[in-house]
Image 1 (cartoon, rainbow, N blue to C red):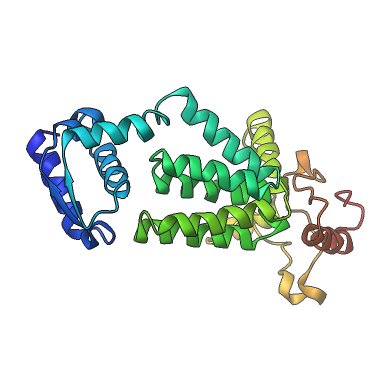
Image 2: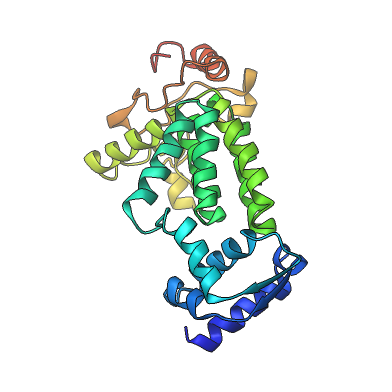
Length: 270
């Protein structure tokens, strides 16, 4: 993007952004902003927010010197393309996974103060909610989804509060990677065994020929049976009886395990 386009982008942000438009900002000089951002529009707006948030005056007149000062204090300490970026993200994720809300919110603050994109943080929380918490607490994914949506609507600085709520909740929640391990195991089997045939009774039979070939013939409609369950095989013959989902050792998944034991008996070893 050219200089004029980037400057127009900044002016538009100052006029329309839900947070920035509340502040009186004068773009007196833009060379430092453009140089540090390297012509990247997203980095430019991110840096602009960092600079504005660093001053409390009623009218903020942005000049090159003040931009350089803020950049040296904050941006240089958190290089989003460098090694420290990945180290801090790693510490952040591992703190949540390790159930330490205190460390998690500290690393969150480090990212925020360093100018990390709040949307990036929210996306990582979405992934973590499913990968590291999963069925141990299904509400975690709901909260992370709402957090992601809210951050995309609100933006910084208010979004930091929403992120903090989500981070502390996820860190304090029961943990399970059972769903994550289940899909990993299933994909490994698919890669190893290839495209195993779908059992005849599970196949779709939209034509007479398919019905004549017994497609779907012996399928049992679960809701026609007691407790909405009919004992039948759903996996390909070659891997029948293979347990892919092993519920974690936590209250919610213990309930799931008991239900699976009641339904399947010894078949899957629940």
